[in-house]
Amino acid sequence: MWWATARLAWRQLSSLESLAGLRSVQGAAKVRIETEGIRTQVIALVAAALEPDLFSEIVTRQGLHSLSYVFDLPIEFEQAPELFCLDLYKEFDVDSLEALAAPAQVQRIHDRELP
Image 1: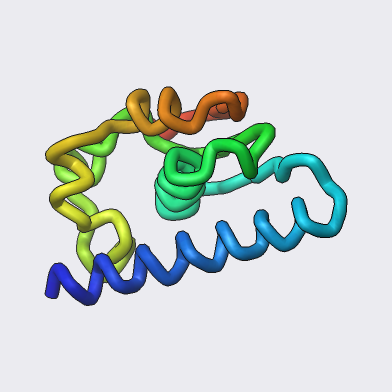
Image 2: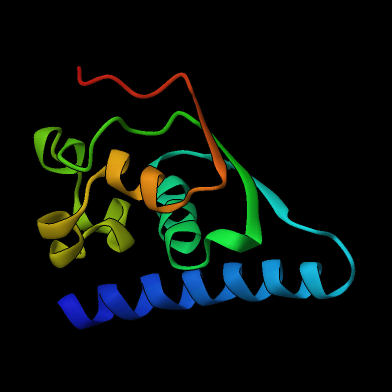
């Protein structure tokens, strides 16, 4: 099942990077991303960590402070399959992904709190 999760996440990352790359080819210097929710937050942060020069800013609403939120809540696999890349948790957290996204500015608005 892990390969299906990785494949889904990789497909979404590739789509986001392709859109950002196309936009930059068309003359826009960098792309600003706004996300809402934990799924799109992680996808955007990983994309920016992989290609930091494509993005100027990442704004997240209702995101999470830490990837441990997925396990602390707990979230079911069906609710957010792309968040279940266990190697991602082993090596990174939200703050380290944000640091890797530099020089993109990262802004979090109303992060989710554990109940």
